[in-house]
Length: 250
Image (cartoon, rainbow, N blue to C red; front, side, top):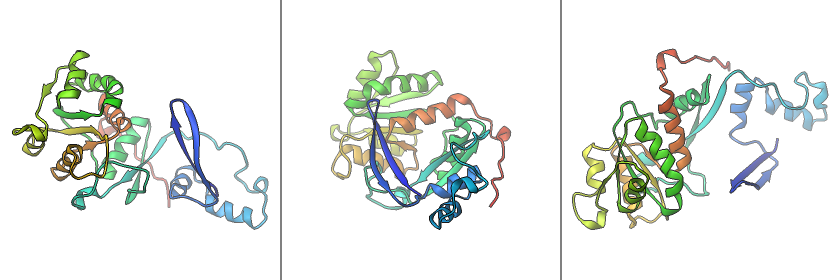
């Protein structure tokens, strides 16, 4: 077994590390494919040829379902802990979402991980760093088309307004009350999208916004990729009663 970690940046693929070991992903892959990978790897290490094992070689057959592994975090239970992610391991567990489509599998993964999926249209608080603002515009338009309203701090609000998206400007924490924290704690915000400029600094406003959202049980997304995933789920208008049930065995 070899664990390979990649990162894609501006269309170019980089390998971060290659380790001769199995990762936490292996049990999930074994479950969804039905291939006992640890057993086969052990037999190969003992000298047995892959071609002599009944599973064959090459790419495995494509499944008729989609499987997504979603990490679980415990930041809500740990006071004063940074919500946004960095290079270090932060997840405290993982769940598996399986569905007929990417959206259905992601839906199950979000629900299973405890993050949940917004049930009703409401207001999204957006505070996006300058580097992400251009990429955030089409995501924001998607949410707006679904009927969501936006509240944003001045910089993000200016960008959204310039692109034809209705948005209400709110004060930063340093600009007095009522401000962004008051709105989050009031229950008027259904989701927070915040991409940090600098993490792990409890004195920065972004850190306080993320903590306030987590402590108020408001979903907080710190990655535009996650925001795109949430948008896909909502746009798909998934009916829980019609979702397929998969029994993957032991």
